[in-house]
Image (cartoon, rainbow, N blue to C red; front, side, top):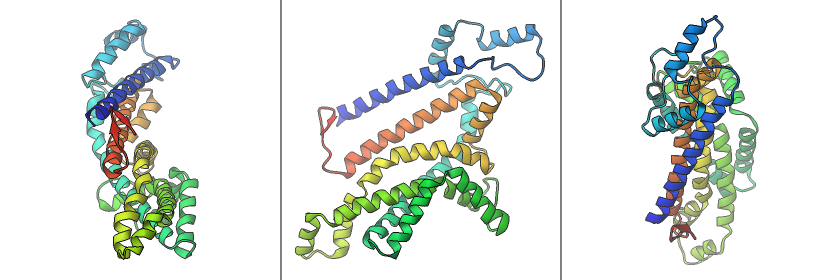
Length: 310
């Protein structure tokens, strides 16, 4: 168990190193200078700014300095926002993204599992058909299209919900619905197919023959075994929600880290782009790691032997 976790952590560190290196050199490969602006800057001031930011040094020296700073939790200074550290920008804006992401993950899992369970228990009936139609629509329609439709219907036409901002519980409804449409669809389909397989398994027939109540069978066997694919999907789902929130935050005017990322791209603020990309990478790696650990805990069939799954 300990060796297994240690190996997972080692792979996380290697992946993080590759991510940092790739992000740094991709930013350096973009043509032009990040200090370029529409206004004409005198060459002397341009040189002084490059010297102050260390852009006058060879790329390999910049790389090793940046690598050392990142290890210490320093993502550098924004090139467009005066005297603002990237770490501070992330810290000030991440709370809104974290709240939105956590609510979206919880809603996606609960609603997706319930829809999948109902579809499996009422197989080939009206509930099953409706749930699967909704699942297909959720998978097919991109989140930004869902967001625009929700804004038009519930804000512009019906005036039930606020269009922009993030000031209270009602402001969560539309962005969470837009973010979770696709994950709910995937989870519902996974839960349905998995539970249908479990319901027709031999050990379910044996449990019925022993006289166990339907609720006991449902709780002990069907639900526990049926949600295993959902646990596996939590890692990729977290990635979808985190990356999807970049666009959703911009659409709904949420002052989160996603909005900062979009603004940094439009202004070519390379330190902010690199810092947020690495920060996102760390979050996704942690989500994947916790998913692996949760899978081991929930499924007794998964055993760890000498640091390997077997």
